[in-house]
Length: 272
Image 1 (cartoon, rainbow, N blue to C red):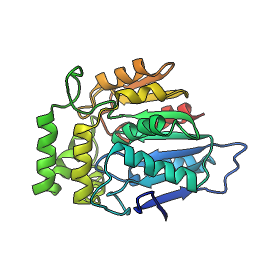
Image 2: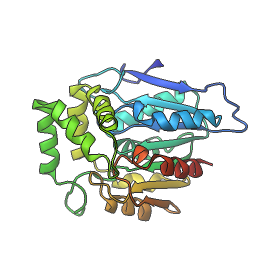
Image 3: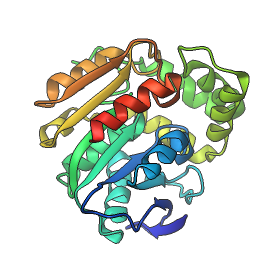
Image 4: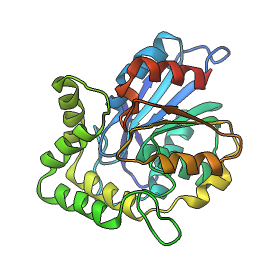
């Protein structure tokens, strides 16, 4: 792990696995986690990808994991600028941008704000896009009150928020240790990052971001997702020309682990 300084001075924890890979044979996979987690959620994908010879770049978004926790800058615009700074400073080219949940929305904002600089393929995993909350002309997703309740809980009892969130991630049964692992990752976030990104999830509107996606796109979603409903995946699929939607019938929002073996198989097919 090393730090990269973003355009507003924030130190971002960046994990560059297998940096000396052979670019002639394998591409780089850039992983963006979701709220309120960190890059650690991709542990069982990072192991697989590096074993297969890929270079993997992962980030702890500002306010999460080991990155700095500024008091501002939690908009999708700024967080996509953070991604751009990493891309520039690592000289990444022809890479596959992968975003989970809120990370998918940030990946889409990167495509629009930075015109998809360097991206050859986009993968959206349980993406909270284009809008996480309902609004005029968009009757999908959570209500504003539901998200306000999450934000309020983060302000007074973040451990309870993290526990509730980890319990809602999965549709398949998992040992308590797995649920506890995701809870602990969520608890590693800062209170500021958790609250501010909750506000971003409530307020951001990414419907125009779709216009700027001109690379092959794979959308992988869990059919039993109770956090990001299937309607959002359908909207992504309809709005991104030529995209492919893959639905895992027995997975919830935590698609990266719920049906781990099946997901990894689908994911590896989507990047090859």
